[in-house]
Structures are given as C-alpha cells and as structure tokens.
Image 1 (tube, one colour):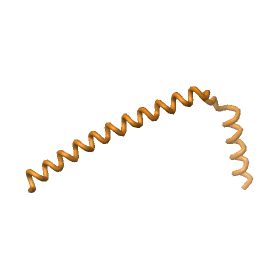
Image 2 (cartoon, helix red, strand yellow):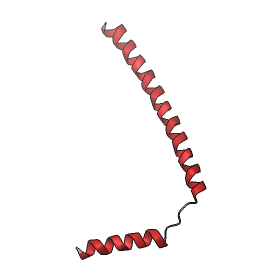
Image 3 (cartoon, helix red, strand yellow):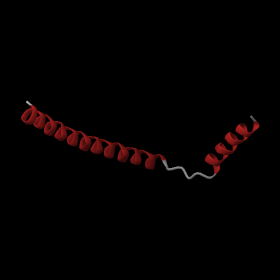
Image 4 (cartoon, rainbow, N blue to C red):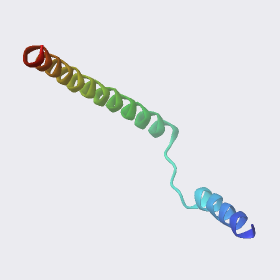
Length: 65
C-alpha cells in the first residue's frame, strides 16, 4: 500500500514541478482548434457514410429488387 501512496505523491510532484502548463489563452485557443477539427472530421465521416448508404441502397434496389 505504501508503494501506491508513494507513486501518487511522486505523480503529483511531477505534475506540479516538471510539467509546463499552457497559459489560459493557449488552452482556450487549442480547445477551439480541437472543437473545429472534430466538427470538420465528423462532417466528413457523415458525408462518406451518406454516400455509401445511397450506393448500397441503389445496389440492392437494382440488383436484388
């Protein structure tokens, strides 16, 4: 149990003393950047999914039905 407590203490010390944290402005701008790219990526996936759905529906309508 002492090993786990020591690990947690060292982890917090590492985060407090050795990690370079971004400024509030940097964190906000990076958050906006991630949100924008997530929206763009989700729209791209939605578009490909829509096209594939229509192609498959067309195939089953013409070939099977």
